[in-house]
Image (cartoon, rainbow, N blue to C red; front, side):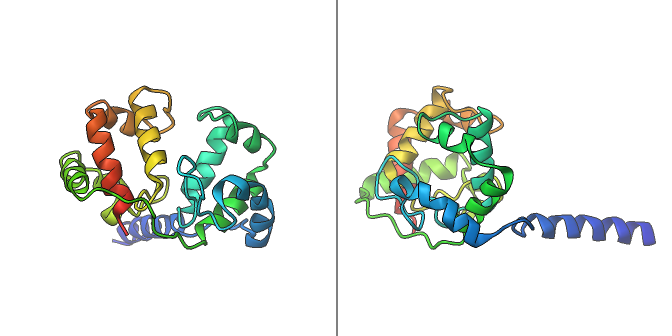
Length: 195
């Protein structure tokens, strides 16, 4: 009985700790390091550019993993890959925690109501919420996509479909193979419209 309790306690503790930001976080250090990110992602992580993702409100874990993937070559971008090269592990954790603590602004993209409806139906059909969670709020290493930049969503799904982006353990690559370009457009209208 004690062993079962101990095992259950250990599992519960591990699950709880996975939700807590990294112990080495330093929000002020993250804010200072994130100044280099502001030109593209905005000072508070709300991007002023449609093809650049919003970082505000993402999980620290997702942001950290993406920075690490850029640094280690598992994800490539002509701007982000060199930016990540100069970052230490602590820098990445601190930056991730800084942006995770910022409030995401709702998208200003004017989504089409008919495409939103079709996108929601496709999201339900492909079980998007199984990974991205209810309201597409994300979890751990799965990004929050609700309210994300429309053009960025479209580009990422196209990149997964074309296997240009593969740092997802295969889940998005697999799902995107089932999507037409119209499906991707409709999904992006739906996802970016979520408040």
